[in-house]
Image (cartoon, rainbow, N blue to C red; front, side, top):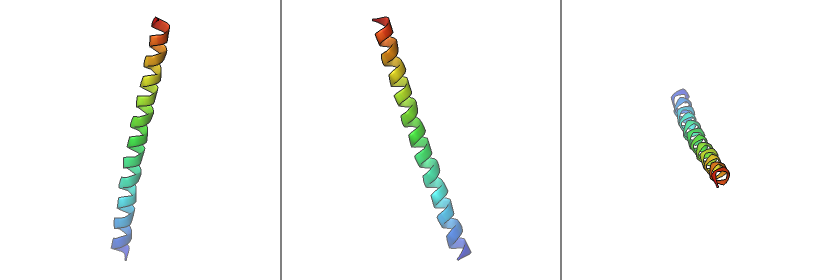
Length: 44
């Protein structure tokens, strides 16, 4: 039972890290897009 629990916790950790990395990538892309649009508006 203990081995199964550790396996489940490992999977949960992997899913958490995977989701966090995807959220971070999405946030960075949104910030970059916002900066690009604001810079473009300032340029024009």
